[in-house]
Image 1 (cartoon, rainbow, N blue to C red):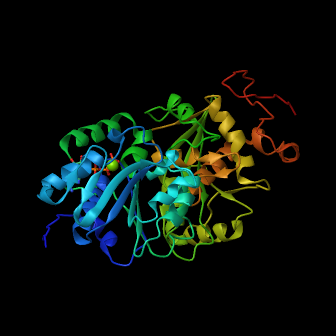
Image 2: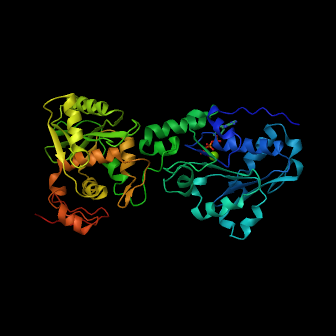
Image 3: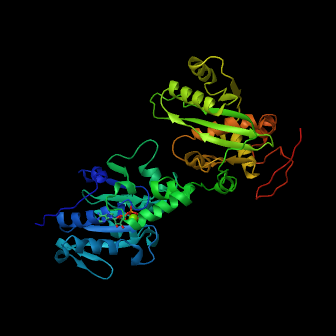
Length: 434
Ligand SMILES: Nc1ncnc2c1ncn2[C@@H]1O[C@H](COP(=O)(O)OP(=O)(O)OP(=O)(O)O)[C@@H](O)[C@H]1O
Ligand SMILES: [Mg+2]
């Protein structure tokens, strides 16, 4: 019997337990996901003679796109080449087993049955796997003790693999799912480190997605566009701010203290331009968010703290007042749904009338996951909620007075143009003066 020593980053340990049905590893580029699974395939083939493995991806136009080369290299580097036969399009493994490479798109409900005897299916780049493919694959891999492995760089919360293994109600039974990033990879090459640093400096809006495993910053149908945020970004704090507000959206219902409380500082200049000055969102107890909000108020010499009346407004007020008496607490009323409140604010962004001072990646990524039909990001959009409260108070004309009309309309049309601008940036605006 061959004794293998495989040096493995600690982070992968949960995937090495026995008795699992699904293994999942997701995260940013260069985190060692492919290498881990490649080595594990070689290990499994040696440990269980006759093992059949299929490496699948959604689309595989040629073998070059598959893990064929990686596994062939691993076999050689692990010093077990004498026990495998690397053929043109597949690899023969000890005891009459086999490793093959296939695209799910090439399969039909009938042809997929050819995989029934396989013990391991590894889905590489699983973010691209369709729900149809996942649905076909799962009941196909059915031999005793069989497993399905997934490695992926997440794109969207609604992608099939994310819905399956990272569902908000938890992973399915028999699944071990880990998050892994470059910082977990002891062999992270210097070439990739240079790329990472470049993205960190040049593409802060994309950095979280590429390197940290965050979802794509821009959801399809998002009401904010990263382009609008980027185009209007400035470095220095303007010196003609007339009003500064700290807006908060505490996670009031949270029993645990794991939820984020949205706290955003916004300002309005004498020329009616809105500014996002700071995202000071925090986790923790009510005292903690109240203290943070008050600290930001002092730091920015703000005029008031904005809270939402409907969502536990009384509680927010009480918590704030328990920390400091005499605060100017402003309550915004919102009878409409979240996206209906956010849309007019997004429209003001599209007009270039809101500028971000600096980069607020987490807030901006939430904004760009906010679609007309709901929030597509992870968890709840607490930072955006706080932002919307604050800007709603700063731009009252566009939001409050026309609320009845908008509620009836339920469309994405902005019904008041506060600046008298007629700018066409791919959206339609209607000016309804009141
Ligand atoms: N077990 C390992 N042995 C040797 N080198 C490794 C190992 N794991 C990772 N590396 C090095 O780290 C790099 C990134 O690893 P890998 O390609 O497995 O990452 P990944 O998470 O699949 O990334 P991507 O999302 O870009 O596909 C590899 O190109 C290799 O240089
Ligand atoms: Mg990979």
